Amino acid sequence: MQIIDGKKVSEEIIEQIKIETGEFKASCGKVPGLAVVLVGDDPASAVYVRNKGKACERAGFHSYEHRLPADTSEVDLLALVRKLNADSEVNGILVQLPLPEGMDSQKVLEAIDPAKDVDGFHPVNVGGLASGISDLAPCTPAGIMELLDRYEIPIEGKEAVVLGRSNIVGKPAALLLLKRNATVTICHSRTKNLKEVTARADILVAAIGKADFVTADMVKEGATVIDVGINRVDGKLKGDVDFEAVAPKTSYITPVPGGVGPMTIALLMKNTLTAFKKQNSL
Ligand code: GUN
Image (tube, rainbow, N blue to C red; front, top):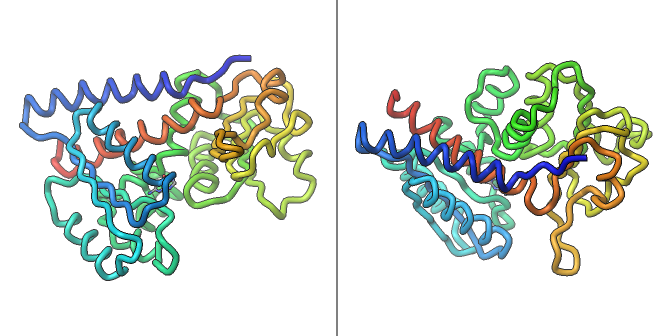
């Protein structure tokens, strides 16, 4: 059993991006700019946004943080998004989810210029992902693919089972695995005989948001288990996988924290660099 070190890989990716950014700065005097919009004061979201700002600093990017009060109107938020769309210094825009109750998240996501949609949530990019032609895939699933590749875990022809069907993780993870020729099954709360399905998986991606949901009897001997869960239990972070019980059965497993989490931010930096290059024809 090998533990997949997402923290180390994410640091390597950000280091590579920093080098490339330095080269662009030297050759054309420009660096990528990422705008992050946080509405309200959800403490978990505030931590994520702060970490995104820190990652920008490490990558050598400009970072623009917009904190708006929880009672901001949808009209005002849409006006900010349009302003950022028009700002040539801003190459990537991320509106932190979830938005406060009463706001139409889909409408806000659709207002973002698809070329600046570093989350990959705009319908144009979702469609591109479904067709296998997008270069801005959602950061968490893209981070999972990067981990599989860096650890040289075979994907083609393998049984991949994704637990969870969210737009942020489950669905795009399934599409990315399919693009790499895995045989993909998506499971969810209504799936029958769940254990039978998950026990077939060579690659099991757990993204259901329930602490310790995946138990040893659900996992095939020698499987790769990717844990996307971030569940707060008694002040501690817990994944969706019962790590202690499952890890001995696996070939590879991601820990929580230090697995997929840091990769999401690294891939956000990568998407911002990709958007910057495209917008500047570099
Ligand atoms: N909230 C939780 N994960 C994400 C993410 O990947 N992007 C955004 N914008 N909000 C999130």
